[in-house]
Image (cartoon, rainbow, N blue to C red; front, side, top):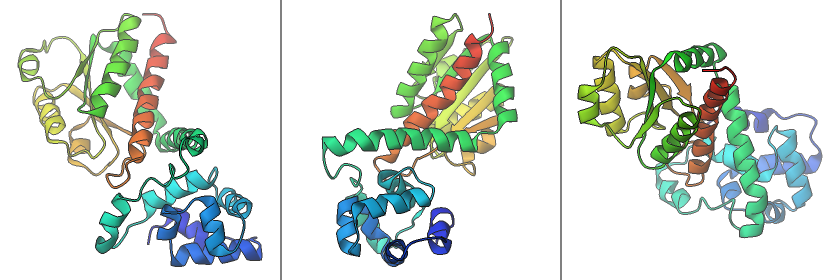
Length: 266
């Protein structure tokens, strides 16, 4: 069973009797959390929604939506229940737009906090120096990641740093790129196994270009092709809402690099 939040549940101390009862229920039936609002879980445990929220905060999460998301990201369902989970991951949306008013900030803040926790400051400083030394920045990403790449490039272009977003491996460009100028290339793939991103990274490495892998899986094939890696948080293909977290996390990484760019004159 997963270790982080589940370990906190298993070994939590200084809990009230009601809170201990809720913990016992969750450890026996964790799937119930994914399909229940705080009020519904309170009914199942014969407690109150306020007790549920208070317990979530004691366990180090920011509230019930944050607790649901972290528990879901850690939990591994048996294969027979994977399809059921895929169709029931609207747990943060069960009460409509009014619930989203509270849930979306939880998703954003959780993504930012976890991304910051995973950062390697020496790596970030090294990449920052490369950004400052580069003649051009290329960012490769597909689907949602291409949208993130476009935003990052637009910000750098506004301050006079040449940056181009690529929606896949632009082979004509890759084969004719100027090897005499320092081009810094970011390749985004949250799984680290996207075939088009792997192709782009491989060509860049063959040309001895500097590659930064922006990934959610540090043991992926893409991570082995990067000179450095930046870890983005939140991607889980079984959880639709995790796409929000992964996008916010990736934007945060690029915005930090952008901020370092404007802190010094060019």
